[in-house]
Image 1 (cartoon, rainbow, N blue to C red):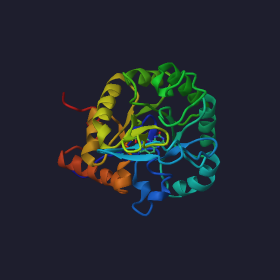
Image 2 (cartoon, rainbow, N blue to C red; image 1 turned 60 degrees about the vertical axis):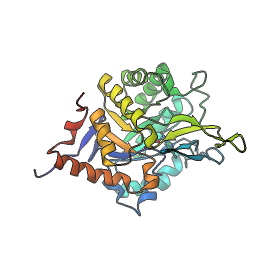
Image 3 (cartoon, protein in one colour; image 1 turned 90 degrees about the vertical axis):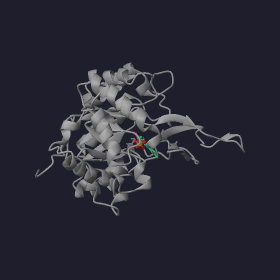
Image 4 (cartoon, rainbow, N blue to C red; image 1 turned 90 degrees about the horizontal axis):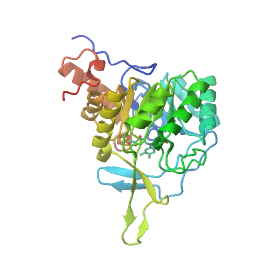
Length: 310
Ligand SMILES: Cc1cc2nc3c(=O)[nH]c(=O)nc-3n(C[C@H](O)[C@H](O)[C@H](O)COP(=O)(O)O)c2cc1C
């Protein structure tokens, strides 16, 4: 076998391999440049961007858990203008494919973010974060909770962004629901080009000595290997129900983990907090995928997508 095709098409976004990084775990790309050539990833997904800079929640914002971590960063980010001026040039110089993850107060802000990113050449695809458990969006008209927990609101937000940009639009969903298919379908019917899942599972940890929550935000989002089986199952559910592709994530730390997601139906995967432990985790998975394909005599990685034998 001479060559293995690792290229995938995620809702119109061409990626030279199916591996990106999960928003919020890879900064704006340059932070990892000492460890490997970040342009070798299928795409770099940047930390959620808001119109204005955000300081996030006060510390403590991170708690270790068995096989994972709880975070309540609260979408700390430099804001759109600083991203365009100071962070984007590096990513463009390196010729990275960029997925810009966005967070706004209400559908109009999401639309403005998407339009301005497209106009400035600041993204090759937009990922709408509708599922951050650590912020409270007063505009979402959901009576509390996350936008991603309300299929009608998922549709409303998705439509607003689709009208604002021609870039591929990915909708990032929450595992904190009874049935992942309902918001996923709402995104698809509203014109999303792909869904991304999962964001973190809402959790809480208490210090028995002080009898207080360990996070200043009281609750946080659980990520890491602890959530992987939940994520694989949700990818499997969504992929069977949708025509648009699924970008899968949640606890991926090595090649074998990533292959599970492809077999469950993900067209591509994102490596999240595993990069904190091993900064080169994502690029090792790119290399490992090629080796896996050679070992299993697979000449096109796309043939693995949804190929789980049940
Ligand atoms: C410290 C931290 C910050 C995060 N920030 C964001 C964010 O800004 N936007 C977003 O959409 N998801 C954010 N996430 C969620 C991840 O992108 C990902 O969906 C989740 O962590 C599951 O993947 P993992 O288990 O591989 O980390 C964050 C996760 C962590 C651990």
